[in-house]
Image (tube, rainbow, N blue to C red; front, side):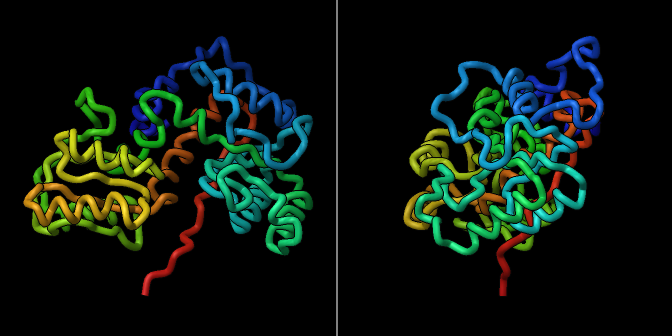
Length: 289
C-alpha cells in the first residue's frame, strides 16, 4: 500500500483494523454480494444509520462476487468499464438513479433509466451505495483522501483545518488544479490575498456549516465540492467587500469526493483477499469553453 494511502486509512482508523490472522484468503466467487456488504459494515463503527441510502440498488444479495469495482458515480461508461474488468459488484458513493434517495417511480417511462437498468442486468452487475457510513468514520476518509492528494496533513484539533505554506489564492487554486488533475477550479474572493490556513469540506455540506466554518475557524480559504450559488459564495463575496479575509475554492462535488472512493481499494483488498478490487474513475462530464 502506498504510504499516502496508508496514512489516510490509518488516520481514519481503518488501515490496521484487521490482523493477518483475522483475514483468510477467499477464492474468487466465494463471497456473495450480501456477505461483502456485511463484512464492510462490520468494520464501520456503530451506530449504523437507519434509514440510510446505503442499500443495494440493483442485483441479488445471493449473487456470487467475481470482482469489486469502486467509483464515485455509476455512469454508463463506468458500468461498461466495470464489466470489462470482470467485476460484478460496483460500490458507488452517490445515487444510481439521478436523485439522492434513488426513487424510481417518477422514472417509470424514462428511456435513459430503463436502458441503464437493462445494461446493469445484462452485465450482471450489482450496485451497492456506500455513502452515509463511509462518511461516518472519523476522521472522514473522504476528506482525508482529498487532503492526502493535496499533500496535506492536519495537526489541528479542528477537523478539516490544514496549515498551508503562505500563498496567494490564485496560486493556491492553480496548485490544487494541478495536483488533482482538474480542468478548472472556481475562485470566490480576492485572487491576491495570502492564504495560510485552509478548511476542507468535500462534497455537499449545508451552506450554514460552510459559512460557520469560515466565520468561526482561522481559515483564510475553504475548499468545497459545491454550494447553491445564492448561499456560501455570496457570504464570501460580501465578507470580502466588507474587509474580511475570507475566500472559497470550488472543485465540484465529484472531483472533491472521488479520492475518497479510490482509497477504498487497498482497504477492500485487505478485507477480501483473492477478490480482484479496482477503482473506476468517474469520467469528467463538464466541458469548459
